[in-house]
Length: 219
Length: 259
Image 1 (cartoon, chains in turn green, red):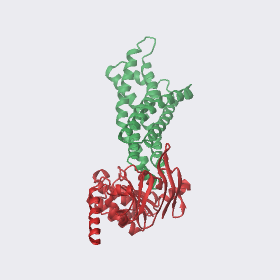
Image 2 (image 1 turned 90 degrees about the horizontal axis):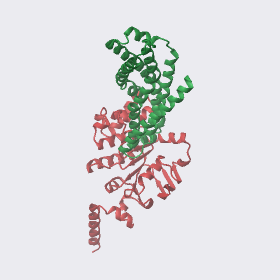
Image 3 (image 1 turned 90 degrees about the vertical axis):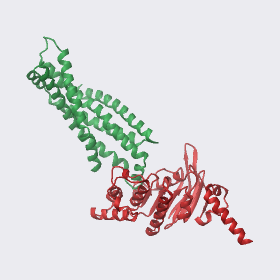
Image 4 (image 1 turned 60 degrees about the vertical axis):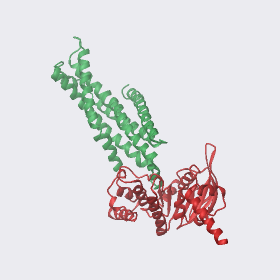
C-alpha cells in the first residue's frame, strides 16, 4: 500500500503542475494555430473550437502527455529502481524473502494505470481552458463561438477512448521503466543509461501502441 | 550448520569457484578470507542463493538448498540475516523503519510489539538514539550497525556478512567485529563473514577458510593462521607489515626459548 501511494504521489502530486502548465499552453497554441490557419468563408468559425477539442481529447492529452510523463516519471522510476539494484537494496529484499519484483514493480504499475486517467482528464480540461483564454484575449473566434465549437458534434466515446489509451500507456511506462531499472547492472553511469533507454523505448512503444490502438478502436 | 559440497561456479566458461567443500558450524564465527577477486563474495552469494552455482550442493541444517523449490527458499530466507558491503539500507526509510521492515513483512506481532523488537535490535547495536534519522544522515559505521540490527530483527538462524569492515576506520571496524561476535554467541547463529581484513580474522575468526583463485587453499582456526605452512596463505597474511613484524617477533621469542 505504501509503495502504491508512493507511485500515486510520484505520478500525481509531483506531475500535476507540469501537466497543468503544458496542457494550458499547448491548448492555447492549438486554438491559436487553427484560428489563424483555418480562415475560410466556407468553414464556420466554431470549427476552431471543434477541431481543437478533437486534437486535445484524442491525441494531445492522452498520447503527448504520456510521452512527456514517460520522460519525467518513467526515468524517475528507472533510476530509483536502478539505484536500488546497484546499491544491493534489491538483493537485501530478496535475502529477506521478499519477492522484490512484486514488491517494487507491481504497486507502480497499478498506481500508474489507476492515476494516469486522472492526469489525462486534468490535461483535457486545462487544454480547453487554454483555448478559452486565448479566445478571450484575441477575440477570434469569440468566446461564445469557441464554447459552441467545443460542444458541437461531441462524442462521449472519445473521452473513454482517451482514458483507456492512457491506462494502457500508464502500464507501458511503469513496466518498461521498472524493467530497465530492475535489470540495471554496474554503477551510477549504468543507472543513467537504464533511465535513458527506458525513455527511448517507452516513447517508441507509446507511439506504436497509439497507432495500433487508434486503428483498432476507431478504424 | 551449513555445508558446501563440491561447489563450482563458472561465468561464461571462466571458473571462479572450483570444487569447494566446507562446513560452517553453529554458534561460531566462520570467516572466509582471501585476496580481492579470489571468489569469496561469489561464494557468499551462492550460499544465500543470489547467484546459482554451476554445480555442487549447499545444505542448511540437513536441507538441500540447491534443490529447494522457490517457495521453500523464500521461507528459509526468513531465517537468514545478511549484512551487505554497502549496508544496503532503504534510502527512503528512517533507521527505525529499516529495522522494522522485515518485521512488517513477516512478523505476526502487532505494530507495538514490532516496534519494540526493532528498538531492542537498535539498542543492541547502540543506535536507538538515531532511530528517526535517514540513512543519508548517518555515518558508514552507523549504517553497518543499522544493517546488523535489521539482519537480526527476525532472530535469524544464519548471519552472512560481506566485508563488514570495508571503508571503516580501525576503531569502528573493531566495534563491528565485536558486535558480530557477540550477536553470534548470544543468538547461537551460524555466522559466515567474508573479509580480507586480517585484524578481523584475529579478533573474531573462530574458524577460517582461505580461498585463492576460486580454490579452498586452507582451513583452520584463527590461532593456526599465523603459523600455517601454506605459501599462498602466508603471502596473504604477511602482506601486512604489522603481521610480518609480529611473526618475526614470535620467531625471535621461539628461538630465545630454544636457546
